[in-house]
Amino acid sequence: MEYVGICVKGLEDYVAEFIKGVKLDDGRIKFNSLKDINYFDYVYELFESFKFSDFEDLLDKLKKIEISIKGSFRVKCKREGDHEFRSLEVERQFGEFLFDKGFKVDLKNPENIVFVDIVNNRCYVGLLKFSDLSRRDYRVKVNKQSIDGCVAYTILKIGNLKTSDVFVDPFCKDGTICIEASLSGCKNVFGLDSITSNVLASRLNTKIANANIEFIEGDCGWLSTKFKEKEVKILTSLPFSWRDLSSVYREFFKEAKTVAKGDIVVISGNDKFFEFCKNFKVVRKEFFIGKMKYYLGILS
Image (cartoon, rainbow, N blue to C red; front, side, top):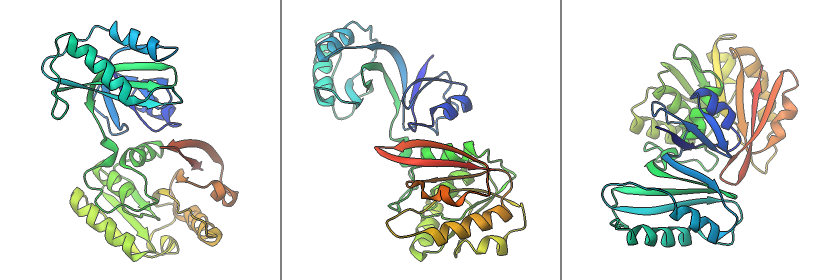
C-alpha cells in the first residue's frame, strides 16, 4: 500500500531518507509503512496523481478516478499555489459527483475523508488517514516563536539524536523539542531558558506529555557550568526578533563549541545567526513553516 505524507517544505530530502521514501513534490513524500509518521502533518493512502491545466481539467480527471469506499464520506481539499479556484469549490463539486454515484455524504462525522491534495498544477488523491499531527496534544502553552512537533521531530532526526545521548535545548521556549526528544526515548533531556514564563510553560507541557525532562531557568552561560566538555547533544530553535541578539548568539556559540558532542543543529526565522558560526563548518538549508522562511544550520 502506498501512502503520501505532507512534511516540512524544504526538508523533504531528509525525511525521504529517514523513512526510505521518495520525494514526490514540495513537502510530499511517498512511502509504504505507517511505522513512523511523526514527520508528517497529514498522511493519506494514495489513489492516483495527475497533472491538470485548469479547474475544468481538474474536475474531469477527478471524475475518472476509481474510488471504492465503505460508509459515509466527505471531500477535503488542501491546496498550495496560485489557482483561479478555491478549495471549497473542489470539495463541493467533487463531493456532489461522488454523491451522485451513490456514496453517502456526512459533512460532520464521515467515516471516510477523500483527500484532494493540490500542489501547483499537480493533484494527488487519496483516503485521509491522519491529519493535524503537528499540533501535538501536549502543546497547551505555545510560545509565539515555537516550532510544531513535526518540525521538532525532524530536527532531532537530522541531528542524529540517540537514546543514550545527554540532550540539551538551550532555548527551550515551550519545551517542544525537549518533549519530542524525551518521547523518542532519550533518557537525559535538559531544557534551558532565561525567561521564567517559558520555563513554566515547558514544565506544564511536559507534564501533559508525561515526559521526563529537567528544566533550568538561566541563559547559555549555564552550559559550561552544568555540563562537561563534549558531553551534550545540542539541537535548538534560536530566538529571533527585531532586537539585537548578537550578544546572545555570541555567547551561545562560544558555550556550545565547548560542551557539544557531534554536530550542533540550529534553526531560526532569521539568518543573522550564521554570522556567528565562523568557528564551525556549516551546512546551510532553507525551509518553510507555513509561508514563513526558516534557516537550518548543521554545525560541526
